[in-house]
Length: 192
Image (spheres, rainbow, N blue to C red):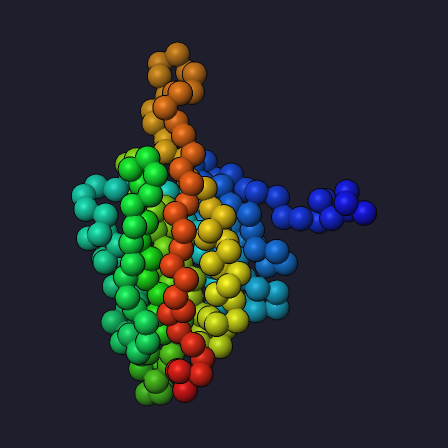
C-alpha cells in the first residue's frame, strides 16, 4: 500500500534552476518554458498558477517587481489587500510577494473583480516569478492554500557559469524558499 501511495504522490520537477512539486490533481500545460497549472475542470481563463522561467535581472529588484505588478494589474484598482511584503533569504536571496483582489471595468461596462498574486525570488543574477490569478474572489480563496503550499515547496538554485573544464561549479547551491506571509490578501465575504 505504501508503494502505491508513493507512486501516486506528485514528483518534484526541475526546470533548470527551479524545482517544485506540482499541486496534486491539478492539470499542467507548458508552452515556451512557461508552465500553467489549473485546478481540475477549471479553464486557465478562470484560475491559473503560472510558473515562469528564470530571467536575468538588470537593475533593482524592487523596481522590477513594481513594474511587473503594474503590468499584471493592467490599471485595475486594488479593492482589497495589495500590500507588498518582502524579506531577505539565505545566500543573499530576496523574496517579494503581493496579492490583492482587483477590480476593473469590462468592455460591457460591468465591474469585474479578479484575484492576483505575484511572488518573486531574486537569487544570484536571476529572478524567478510565479503568478496566481483568478476570475473572482471565490476561486482565489478556494485555491490559495494550495498555491501557498506550492510556493513554500519551491526551491531555487543560484546558477553560475560552468568553468571551461565543463564541470559544475561547486559554488552552485540550492536556496531554500523563505516562509510566505500567512495573511489572506482577499476574502470572499469581504469582497461582496
